Image 1 (spheres, one colour):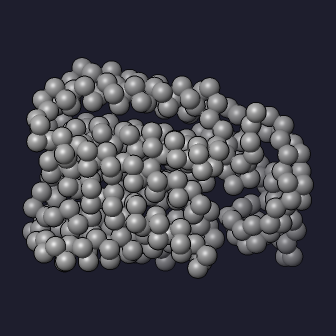
Image 2 (spheres, rainbow, N blue to C red):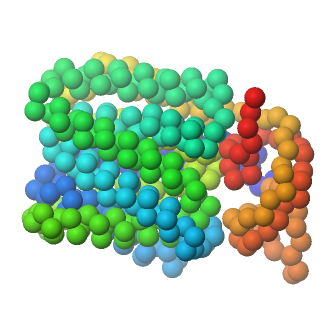
Length: 353
């Protein structure tokens, strides 16, 4: 087996953590630099940054999935609606009213919505350990929220509701994106970014929103490249290895990164409860990182296309001439029964009693 196939859960968890950090650091920066722009303008600039940066990198990056085909268009449009249009606009509007720290911590609920939606749609196995990890992260979010409400003003409530609505939209986005995890992530980011930028840019024009200054514009483009381009790329790679539930749960560490940066930038709502919440999140990440899942299972006959290699224990078809390393093409699996450590990836969506 390939190196990361020995510990598919650990490698997926690390990818999800990198994705969370890439997203988390941008939240307080978006609150600061998006203050002079409308919510739709801010959202449009974020996705222009994501699409542009991915388009620049794409010619030099190794293909890491199948091509994005027409069959994926309905799903991609749904993803763009929830994740590229509604969620960033709601977040930008809420950030301007609820503040960076409270908003960053409220983003923890994206994990809750993702776990609920993905469990219903995909029936991913959670198990006791992952259940404890999700519970620890939820407790961490509640503890951190206690600090946010200590100085909370009534006028901020509407902003916080908008941020919570954004997390619900992103939870749906994460669930829908699971079906695109085997597609080259750069193609997904480019397509999603372009669709989101067109939609929110059109709404910004329709509502007559003003553009920010050059400095804020460049900062928002950079936030989009990092928090919405790079982050989504790693998120898709994590989903490919560990599924939607685990990736969504681990992604909840991102708001703590954002809250910590907001504190350093002068938004001092975080206190002792946030510190306890950070400990709870560390416990949750540890539980995810050390999860081991192995049992006898059956693979039914299957024909599909995704990035694969021939030393992973699942791909035994023959090429002439021989192909070494990762590659993608349509291929067929015969029925197989074996036991090894695995995660809910494209080959392991089986049910558990």
